[in-house]
Image (spheres, rainbow, N blue to C red):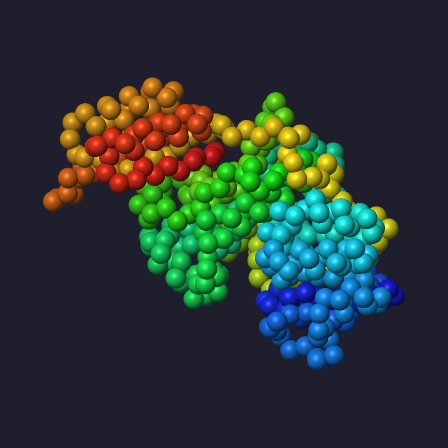
Length: 425
């Protein structure tokens, strides 16, 4: 029996989940893996669960200087002091497991370098998809494949909001308030609803899938705050469901396209039926074809499950720490990124209800090599001078579409914002 002492940094929802899960599953882990996990120290400003006083460390040095502690779980969140604490632990030769996608995605090279210098392990399965074992699958089960695509729903908060907007025909702001009241959304929901959380996760996921570091700032990012119930209702009429997707593709020339944005997908697509706060991730491999992982992407026990699993994995592989399969550095000059991807587009705006407006808009699209597949033009409501105009394009280049939309937005006949949603089939 291996007796493993651990420390937990951060004792909020997830830290409390780790503490409780170890107590709950300790006998089971001992029986299956021959490992006894014991929480020796914790470090936090506040505690979501009751912890004996003798297990509360006064500072990070008390943990990193304790020779009995071999694994440190970091679930503090944010950049600082999480980064400094992890570096101290790694430099002291302690294996670190973390769920901190923000900090990992932006500081991965430094963290890995510290782990390599001391020979420590650095594991972060919980940083992407909560309890879904997607990173382990990429590392340990997909070696015989070249990954062509990795994409999916990786943020439960936005998926909950979009599900409610779709199922109940409600406004974004209304559903957001409900999500906050239920604890699905933070008091400051910016990271979720603006797509930043999904972008951090895609940075990690795409890097591992394509064996090349994908910096956060290389990922196009657009949130769901501009979506209206009209967009979702009209999309439904056309046979589409709107989801916030994180999309990574490796093109035939070896270039990588990475983007996070609201996306219309056919209602028959498997992702269209992923509802509530659940996550789902697709991988398209050269040998296995398309595979999907589905499960809870956040929460105390789902995330704690991945963290405790990483602890057990680390103990079994203590002499073989898992490092990146690529040149892990901040500069991305060794990778070609494609920022002019090709897809279809759904476009909605309000226009003055008078002759010639559609012809002008169609002319602008034509000038920019954007071909229109279908048009829905609805008449103005009584007392109103503008009417909704909806267009769906054939496949077009992103830059051509943006140039066309910019010019259309400047037309006097266009009332309000030209809303554009990408379509993936």
